[in-house]
Image (cartoon, rainbow, N blue to C red; front, side, top):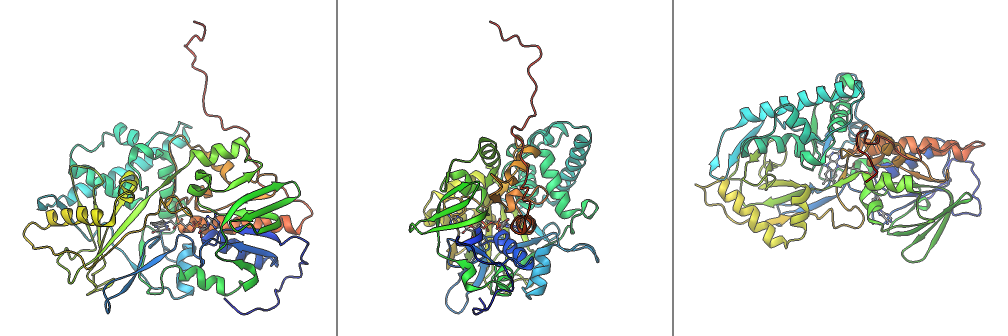
Length: 494
Ligand SMILES: Cc1cc2nc3c(=O)[nH]c(=O)nc-3n(C[C@H](O)[C@H](O)[C@H](O)COP(=O)(O)OP(=O)(O)OC[C@H]3O[C@@H](n4cnc5c(N)ncnc54)[C@H](O)[C@@H]3O)c2cc1C
């Protein structure tokens, strides 16, 4: 961070610790702080439990001495980049500005397919699966126009006659839905309409998206550099409090008091909470008084999914020379998606490969010892290479996102029973004092880094209006989210 200098704002400090407390120093928190600063408001404090900024943008150094690499245990891709001179993904813009190295990742075109007997070519099924998802997206758009209710993606597959009929089709559907589209959950748990919206808004330029490309960050300083370097341009040491775990948030029409784990109290006029949906759902933070029922319903109706990358390093590469591989197993989602980092575009000669699991399978392995997970992974890898003597890895690592009390999962997802009114209520202010932002509050880009970015930006702009006064409207909420009718033909009298 830069050395102490005079903030350019002419705001005078009140008797409170700050005008605005920003809880959480991830993308949303840092971008909200930058926005306040741009508006001339420097009387804010970022309160962050970890010892650095970046939130879920976390990396890990893996490898034997002399062959160590920075790998991303959290977000890795800039998802949707830029088409021509069109709108760029703001994450790409930050990467360009701070010279953070990223590389196009060919997710659909550079792929090898396997089953438990080894190599098995079912790439044609993958193309069918991609087409099916596009068709499902188009039908979702029609349903929106007709004001039809949302359904699950599983229903969508059934209605369009695309339900997988064997383990290869299931593996390809997993690839497209649970993985490439980043739902990290099976189709029965995902909303149909919102799934289509979210993808269109990010990847479809006709809908205001960026592009259908995904770039993999391979910068050895870590992907988090985009947000840390951005913060270093404006953030002063007295504007951030690291290693500060929030336990209680008390609020009234008068302001907010936040109590930390070590009993320090911090007071402010406004508070912006950017903690993950999982943290809010879990109840680790006590709100005093408890949050109103419309807010609780919104928080508890969305879902926090889990996405787990399991990294392995070997003495040398013995696997596919494509960027990606799919493994089809009798059990859907069992170590299915493989990515080679020992590739000319990424870290050639690194001996690194990783496999991703999601949803319930992630929770399952979070409850296992590392050595037991490694054994299972190796069993799969040896099934994929029946004619190769596959050695044990020299390094192995995965992060347990669901068990981490600062995250409680990887990113939010929109289940069928979550309605636009819930999304509005997730973003809405409580008593005009408590503000909420983060990837989960983004209607268009929930789950993504750019969702967190835009939400931080928007909250910063709106809170600035409140600080500047004289009128602070806050964000409106619905007292109840209605999308049900009484059963017309059922008599309720016995
Ligand atoms: C494994 C994984 C893969 C992903 N892949 C991608 C990807 O490829 N591309 C993409 O665009 N997105 C991806 N995402 C999603 C992306 O990481 C998030 O959308 C984004 O980082 C969320 O930012 P945020 O500011 O909303 O929240 P966070 O980053 O969670 O920031 C909230 C902050 O609050 C802090 N905090 C929590 N509790 C407390 C407390 N009690 N007291 C004080 N501080 C607290 C946390 O430490 C954290 O720093 C991935 C996420 C994961 C986990």
